Amino acid sequence: MANTESELMLRMHGIKKSFGENEVLKGIDLTVARGEVLAIIGPSGSGKSTLLRCINRLEEIDGGSIEIEGEFLAVTDEEGHAAYAGAKKCRELLSRMGMVFQQFNLFPHMTVLENLLEAPIHVKGLAREEVLPVARELLNKVGLTGKEKAYPSELSGGQQQRVAIARALAMKPDIMLFDEPTSALDPELTGEVLKTMKELAAERMTMVVVTHEMAFAREAASHVIFMEGGHIVEQGAPESFFSNPKEGRTRAFLQNML
Amino acid sequence: MDKLLDTVLQMLEGSQITLEIFCITLVLALPLGMLVALGRLSPVRPLSRLLELYIWLMRGTPLMLQLLFVYFALPMVGVRLPDIAAALLAFTLNYAAYFAEIFRAGISAVPKGQYEAAKTLGMSYPLTMRRVIFPQVFRMVLPPVSNETINLVKDTSLVYILAMNDLLRVARTIVQREFDMTPFLIAAVFYLVMTAVLTWGFKKLEAHYGKY
Image: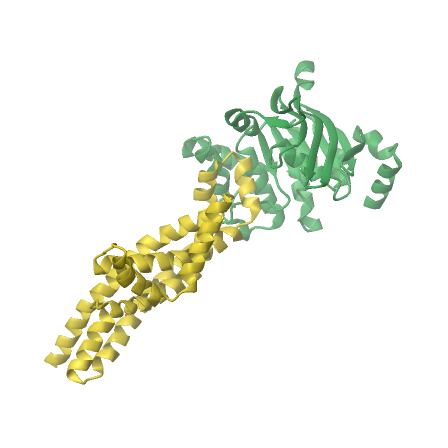
């Protein structure tokens, strides 16, 4: 148990990323162990979403290294340029991560069930009968049994986001990435999505969550990172982080959020 | 009465040329248009610029001029095509340009998040296009494609200047011979029937793909 507890799922070191002249990540280090929930908070423009998107290569880093379960996705060579692993290795490493987006990004022309079946069947090459029970179980888990045949447009935002979570889980990822999963939702719908995420956390799913939901970070996270201006300003366990922030900027930010 | 029947039969024969040009142009121009659209959106600049030039030429000059060019000017440089092939070449190149712009708009209208979601699910680019992007593009482009398709039915009458016996030319030949305007009316009805069938077909398609 102690061994699996300390198993490193994700390690990022010295991550740098610029968009043109604008340096959004100025050397970020972080590690996530198996079963940990890392919450990344910070004002908009702090680079937190970019950092998350660097983990699964939706953005490419300019410098630094990324390790997934002990294997390098990207390393920086002697000249200081980040180099990614070969195409096959990258595909394999990236397949261990699932992602949930702010805008859900469900496939609108497919039903809920088809959204869940799509990748397991067409990417993993599994048989439909094989995936079907898994998909139904996941829908049950996110509380959407009976919505199999609905199209995303027929669902509320909260329901769509829960389908998106189920769709990512259908690929059986080791790490789940959440990019402000409740930011596009009406306040009364955020609860159902956060509940699903808390259940996932309770099942020891490794998660990295960029969020504005301080209550969620406080309750469900095992570690909190506060970012501003492309730096990590402060981090720690949620209890101490929220009740006793050391940095002035963290205090100012948390005050604003309440 | 016999005369009318005879006229209608002659015109049905003329409709064959019309339908032939229509169908073959459509079958060739739609996929070609999709390839041109993908090329236009490609990050390879020279390819994109070249296709932009092609689209500008095709949309910037009259189809009539393009027909005359293929039919009369190409033979001068040694390219001699059979009549129908010449007409099909001009029609296909012209319509592919229009379809390309429709498809390009449709592909651009699919949100970036769709590509990202597909990518995080491990889908390759071809798989993403086939399973995620094209079905959404297809639905979006149906109305404009329907428009162009109906235009094509009527544009086929331009082959009239190439002395091909299409529906309109047959009608005019009879009118000139008999000093009777009825063939024009019949031609109008024929065109209307063809466009009505198309309108109905596209409506069905839109209903089918509009279910989400």
